[in-house]
Image (cartoon, rainbow, N blue to C red; front, side, top):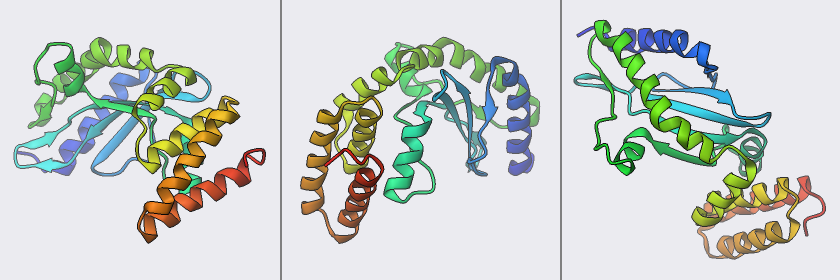
Length: 212
């Protein structure tokens, strides 16, 4: 087996070259164990593909994942909570999408040899064309993301995303309602999480001055 960092480096280079004509570009905020490629869906919303480069005994287990990120909402989420990076609004593994489509669980896409790299790159691109693009289309607008967050947001971090989505679409009443829920959560959280939630609330209200 080749040195795994070399296998990972060559896979990422091959994937970047093959995916570039389809609009994919590597994001600079990945790391040695997880790389992210993105392409725009519109001026502020990006489709993303994540590849796990964690070293395993057998090689690389890519476990491709897809996500959609509203750039401004993500940046504000990181800023208000005090994180280095903001989250995507919705994400799923290709394995999960394959299972939901009745295709079993054969989407981990491992890479064991340098000779296999080009084949694996084509397989991932094929998976994206067959399953990923449907996912991206389902969440390609801010209203799509709002609907998803309305049905899924439970934690303070998730509710922070929902509040930002409402604020950025001009829905003050619903944003205020989410902020009230966050206040209730903060009152029941341990000290450190409560401070984090309170930091979000204070930063949110300072940024969106019209929110009480």
